[in-house]
Length: 148
Image 1 (cartoon, helix red, strand yellow):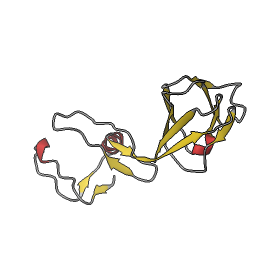
Image 2: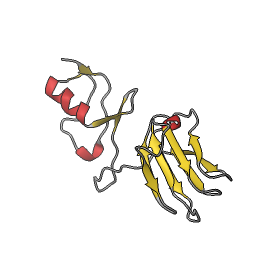
Image 3: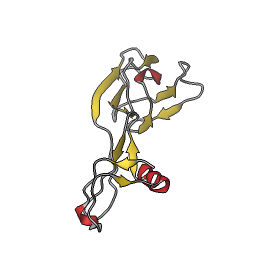
């Protein structure tokens, strides 16, 4: 059984007796603590909630926006080599045609998602390089907003 070296202060829990270093941590307590934390891929982190006890989930911070435009039509685009967690893909409201979206496949018209003007989709990808687009109509614009 491991010992807690440094107590975590939770004054609102009003634990009795007060938490002190070197508490014996049983296996079942370790499992409960592991479930009450989040993992960011590197280390465990305590989860936070509102004063009312509501766990808040949010979107990751936006890192950039890419504008994809072409004057010729049937323009194929592959995202750049940028690590990301999510990407929001938006077909401009003034587009005359559709935008084909495919993930990890350069032939975007086979297995794809079709976006009409002013439609958008948000997807989770590890790298923008996984995103393939085809703007069908000349002068149509697609924007990618990505996070990390």
